[in-house]
Amino acid sequence: MGKFKPYRAEQLMMFPNSIKDYVGEGHLARVVDAVVERLDTADIEEKYSELGQNTYHPKILVKLLFYGYALGERSGRMIARRIETDTAYIYLAQMYQPDFRTINDFRKNHLKELSGYFVEIVRLSQELGLVKVGQINIDGTKIKADAANRLTKDKEGYQEWLKKTEANIQEILAQADQRDAVEDQMYGDQRGDELPEEINTQEKLKKRLEEVIQRFQDEPAASPLGGKERINFTDADARFMKGGNGKIDANYNCQIAVDGNQMIVASEVITQANDRGALKLMVEASEKTLREPVREVAADSGYSSYENYEYLSKSQKVGYVPDQRLMKVRSREYGPYHEENFRYDERNDCYICPEDEKLIRYKERRQDSSYRQWRQVIYRGRTCSECVSKPLCTQQPQRTLARDDRRTLVDQMRKRLLSKEGREKYLQRLYTAEPVFGHLKHILGYRRFLLRTLRKVQGEFRLMCIGHNLKKIHRWWVLAT
Ligand code: SF4
View 1 (cartoon, protein in one colour):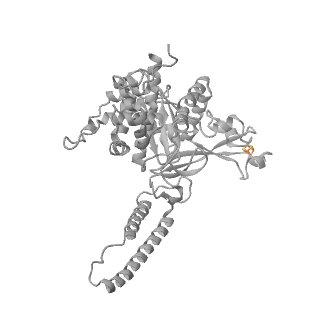
View 2: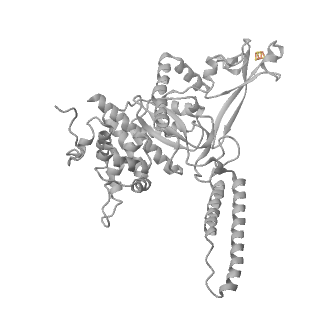
View 3: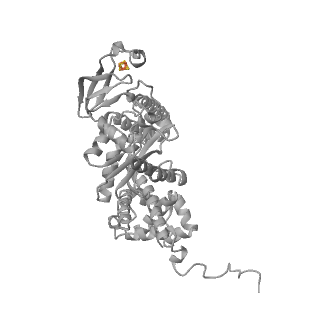
């Protein structure tokens, strides 16, 4: 018997008999293949004409993109390289070899349809029993825009840049005039009316600068940092926000709602740094996708606001959303005379201060603008002037406290969160929503978008979420078989 297996570099049949033999039954590529086969891709197919050269079937390119996004391999070039060497890609590509431009163009031209398959895949998971409807856990993270920070400026910055560009154009034109005069002398009546090449670029730059400056007027979007509004030149939709690393960059705020199995049931991208405005959006997006009401919602304190508590209460959803002060109250970080240490006596509608004195209803104030509505009752101490602790409590003649008429909702939320069940429900988001972003950003490396502008970034984020969900379906399938 020989020492080695037969040496078969020259063997003619190098490949398996069927393309399916390239990957095992339990491979992720098999799941991607099966899921995409179930998708209705007629919307993309209809865009192709019967005339002209045959092209790759859209399902093939959808499979390649979904599989790539599931693995963190999202650039057209990388996918095209894998198609030459990786058996799973070869299987999904059905042994065709679309080049990187074909893949990139397909993503660019059909991004809307591709991101629309997110809903179909979630519903498919729902049919399979993978999605636990009931509680959703919401979380957000900042992902960097494809934009250089140094090209983010305020309106004055752009006006200055525009001025310089216009001066450049004038200079180039003046040089061209001089050159024309010399050439006229030398060559007489020959054509000399072509614009110099540089002016073309400068004119394009000028046009783009004018567009960006116009955006300051058309879409006033105050800087989340309270400073001047700033817009990035390369991706004017991105906003300067503080990321998880504490750095302020041109970012997008990416939001997800996940179920108890870490399936993403809703994904959105917003341009506000603050998460508060996203709670209602994510609940409604989840309900639209799942076609069922969400009963319980867990999110971190970044989502707490009177408006959100009111929304949850009115829509009869049980919230597990701590307010920003709860942690400090729990760890007794507030001084003894902080308003959190004044007890509200509901029956008598008054506050009891740390010295056991009453603060009674004094007056009301309200705001009723289209942007914001609130009503507060002001409570005022009666005996503060005689109190020995007054220097520690207030510098005013009497201590006052403002109570929003929705404050009861905060107290109810705290009570719920501090119960055994509430703690467990809130903890669920720690091991469902947060690991999803951990996986997307740190394992798959999605810390920066490849595409620009909000619409395209939303599409790309959906592709990331589709990739994640396909992996979840794969895991379920492996466990089930
Ligand atoms: S100053 Fe007024 S509110 Fe403050 S502790 Fe004294 S009595 Fe109470």
